[in-house]
Length: 124
Image (tube, rainbow, N blue to C red; front, side, top):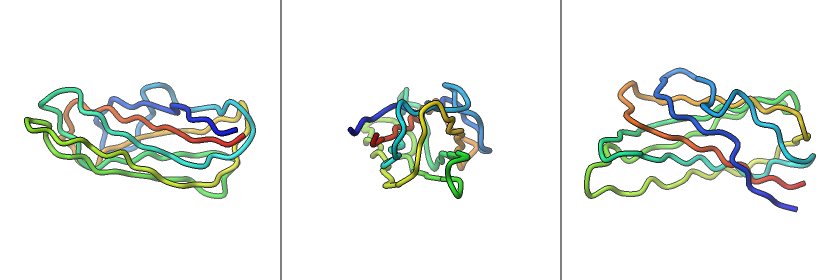
């Protein structure tokens, strides 16, 4: 069975890794494998400014931490171009009720009204 789940959302502007707005960790629904990560940047206003960003994932079940990132599309004034989602193929073990710690950061200190979403595609 494959399923996609929203793992975390971040609405901050920190240039250092910070805890996801939705909480510090995500727990998979079933035992299995994390197959893909999708990082989506959403601008909430025409004045939004989103450039480089990263998500950091940690689990005691993994041999190393996972860092993924993406790039924004600058200031969102008209005409605004969509920010393409960033997809990363992974193959990591997950256990039900076993926490994955998720943090986010931006590469610039001039971020304005960003929202970052991290989705996982799981096989269980």
